[in-house]
Length: 194
Image (cartoon, rainbow, N blue to C red; front, side, top):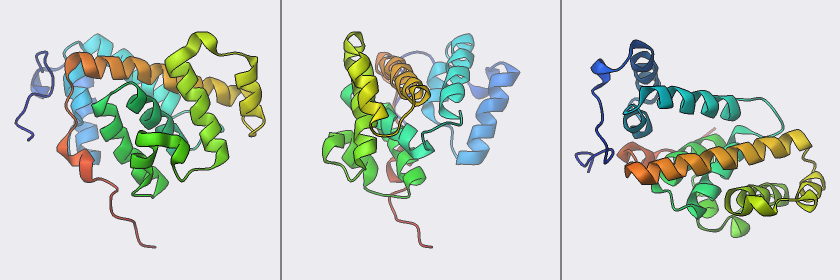
């Protein structure tokens, strides 16, 4: 299946990319064992790839009130609502690994309201979905609902920025017909022992 195109737009050869991007992609390949197709597809426009990953890293690597697994829950839930196969598959794999739960990503992608997550996490995803789908309607009651579950306004910013950023990501993945790597489908499916 990997012989299908990564993107509907031209994908440059890694060796032909600017040195900083080539080094970034090779570092990811060394760590993951493969190159996620998002790097290859977005390398079509190197300046935009740099900006994309700078913002991605700023919100996804930031320390705060959300766990790494919770951040991935936001990505999976909002990406599913936006019909983004790439992000659901890729970030579903990351969510399974970060949550150490082989079932969670499928549950969150299909219907987070029925998923085996906490009421706090459901409130987080309710807020993320509103930002993703109806941002014009976000109001004080939405922030109050988060606060009632122990989230701060800073946490609300994080939840909203992840939902907003991945709305952009979802649209770019759909625009480019970005194909998920086969490797993502099986990652984190087997529960870890110990």
